[in-house]
Image (cartoon, rainbow, N blue to C red):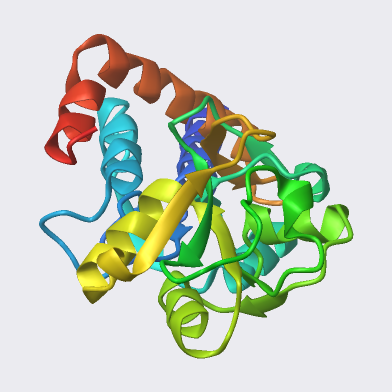
Length: 249
């Protein structure tokens, strides 16, 4: 009987480990991000973005190895909703998203921006409602795009920030609505920053970001609490601040 109890206990421990850290063959947990520099930077192993680095460090602080995989955002959200994906990095608090995902403690934030061509000669744009009757671009699936939908503002959607900036400059569009830091970083990398004007959005506060954990992923609430514990550790020991400092933040 004692032997049977020990076997069952080992089986239970193994099951819990499997559930919490369903892994690649290397034993690491996969979470997902889209290219959204400087928060998440695809194809830059030495500087993968501060949200990616914070996520890796927070999990490492509680003994969990993770690998961040990059995919289009709309696909990531479909997978988080269905339970195929564990969690997503740099996730906004969107009402419809809360039905299928739980949010971590805040990991970063961004300022909202309206971006125009430097030759734009229309009326000043300072609040979201100013975008009505303008030719507006947004990135498909991003919180800014969902905000436009919520407010009934017509717009065109593209799949990336790079696409949006190219469309803004070449296809007679008025404005791109997006997070300031990310768009400025991408524009600088594309060599077009001097062709753009950035303005803040007075009606919108700084926009917080989180990790969002699929409610359908086994033991996701336990994993979320574990992540929050690790996040607190790196905030208290200075790792969090050092990561942001490397990106000039």
